[in-house]
Amino acid sequence: MLAVGLMSGTSLDGIDAALIETDGEAMVRPVAFLGTRYSDEERRVLADATRVALQCDRPGDRREIAVAGDLVTRAHGLAVAALLREAGVAAGQVGVVGFHGQTVAHRPDRGWTWQIGDGAALARATGIATVSDFRSADVAAGGQGAPLLPVYHAARAAGLAGPVAVLNLGGVANVTWVGRDGELVAFDTGPANGLVDSWVEAETGARFDAEGALAAAGVVDETVLTAMLDLPWFDLPPPKSLDRGDFTIQSARGLSAADGAATLTAFTAATVALALGQLPEWPVRLLVAGGGRLNRTMMAMIGERTGLVPEPVEALGWNGDALEAEGFAYMAVRCLKGLPISFPGTTGVRAAMTGGRVDRN
Image 1 (cartoon, helix red, strand yellow):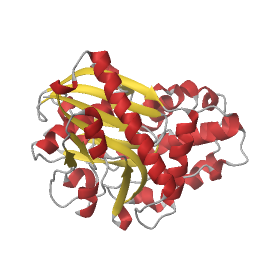
Image 2 (image 1 turned 30 degrees about the vertical axis):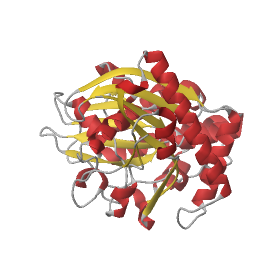
Image 3 (image 1 turned 180 degrees about the vertical axis):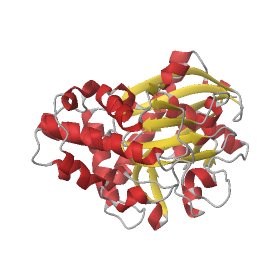
Image 4 (image 1 turned 45 degrees about the vertical axis):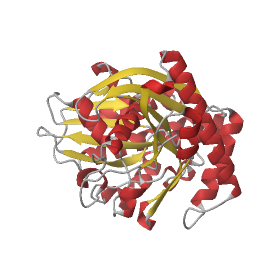
């Protein structure tokens, strides 16, 4: 069936919307992709909601979060309409929408994860059955609730000589390892663009370090980097997950703008190398998706620390901007069919399980 997938990441930059044709198993055909940007005011509303959520003991009713949830639902509805208009596809031709929503806090250690956005309202707005709340069932069953994309990575990587690793560099980084026999291992590795973005915005007012130019002009402070790496979390065995708010830029305070960017970029690269060392076998290829693949300095540092040549997924003909949104379209179809989306090797859940909540228009 045709399926729409929607993803709004912790970088708060905008919404990725993808249209694919899939059976939720081996067959995947990307059809269209559209990226939309949040305005400065929308980013402020979402950042306020995230700040409030991170202070909560559990998900609940808070005014800032309710306002942000309405914004998320409305913006995603507009993104679906724009995507289908651009693709020349009528809503009636689409079988399902996979609506990830906006993560405002992820606390599997406390037994909850919090994505805002109303799936029922989106189904009414689009006229298409909508699957949302992909992570809660996994967390309730003892899993980490993340990462969820490995099942899609495995579908796209089928046929490649392995083992292969797919590294997603979003606000947080995660890796999927696909073994020679299709075995899946996946987990979050640490921050990706999140800390660098926060640093660059605080120091220069820019939203991100374009192509890693600021980091390239700086020098890595090895003392600061060593201190940042001295966290027990990195020694935990996978699967494991984290929240963007679990790390801050405070350790880099006092450095110049360029040196801070270089050090935080090196932190991402070093944590990727540590993560690869926790895989069952060192991968023969490192395929990279997410915005970080466009950061030349980050990619070079990852290559230096891993001994691999990090390849943007475009090397395989994939769209690195669309991959996450495509994945939620794919998982939405799997949810409709009762197929698993999380596994012991990817989230730590005891047995493979499906998830998501289905709302029909």
